[in-house]
Length: 534
Ligand code: FAD
Image 1 (spheres, rainbow, N blue to C red):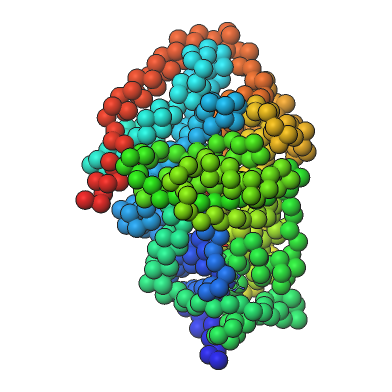
Image 2: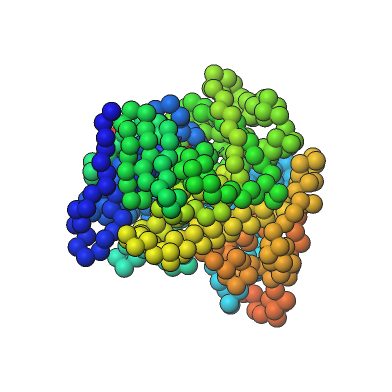
């Protein structure tokens, strides 16, 4: 048995006695994102060891992201051309919601700031003027680019002309919460999760992270209840200062060994199961939509994520309303013959959050910390946010509880904020043709959200009326879900009846003209990514 001595007294940080020996358990997206980021942040001043089981697989899903993920790649000094082709990645400009209002209806939630005219958001003007029945196309350029399957970049690699203010040097290496409101990057990414984990393995190992393939059999606690080491099957004891639990839904360290309770969100978000397929497709023939599609079904919804080489798809449902067999049948019918040979991955989802994600010297990141179903692709965003917060509140050997407490409240705020936002999707969806959809209107609603919805009925969401703590979403996101879903009656601000609307009408026209020009000029996504491979 080899003994890996990770603890040591070498203090290269000078006078600060930092927690220098970090042990990460788990090698999924969370484990490798954490290892890479810590290496990018601290280089060899922090010793990182990642141990992942060769027997317990990764979750095998998680391929769509938030636009803020770009800060992660920027932090690692990775350019798109470095990693995107290696991960079959594509661009995502929006989430497309199909059939949430009624069959045949769709709307987009784009990564685009809402314009302001005469002090009111253009969406408010849309409620007043209703230039067409498509708020998304009238108010946002990206909705038209999605319908036309355009790439946000020209073939020469330049970004399409938009109102996005590029991150100048002083924004470099800022956290997502510091960026919010300053910039709205117009796209996120889709990628193959397994390939990204592989890519990041190379990144972290090249920068000195130690990688062990082994099973953690036991988590040893000291007299105070802190993790002293983990015991592995092949490599013996692994000691460290800080232990990061990236073991997925099992939460081997935080929930199992330290006994930190898990708070279920099931009463407000009932989807607890999913079945996923990876469908090989000729993407040249099919085309690559630059968005994630969420198509409402009888007992949940199906995601469609187009990659360069295949489609990732899955049915997210509540088992109280649908059996796994029915769900798989529905998914296979939805996908058609292309998915006939694809193997189904049935997943039970643990919906909620650990009461505290940082307990003693253990921090859970990823599914072990919390998860709120994949609508709006928040899993990887949670990971990214948690890592940023960990670096910001990185402990020293005095383990001042202020770092831990600030970290815990930042993480809980994000998880609770996203919970509210997802509950809103179901409340605002007009669809009511099955028991599942009717029940979405009578289920418990978090108290604060119920109050906010009453306000939003008479005044669209703004930064004062959405959840006040950082949770990754601007008021625009809430507006889109309310305007697109159609179940909650909305009124324009009364003042708009008294303000000259000529500038608003001009703005609607400008957006329509700009969208038309861009659709003509930009290549489609397939052309763009094929050109990168030539
Ligand atoms: P896992 O991938 O489960 O990895 C756990 C790791 O721990 C593995 O390496 C395993 O070997 C290791 N391990 C476990 N036990 C031990 C042990 N005893 N010893 C050693 N190692 C151990 N997020 C998004 O952002 N976008 C999406 O589109 C999206 N879609 C999703 C769809 C579904 C149905 C689900 C369930 C999740 C989705 N997510 C999505 C969330 C996303 O998949 C996860 O956040 C992400 O994959 C991180 O997972 P993880 O690394 O925490 O856990």
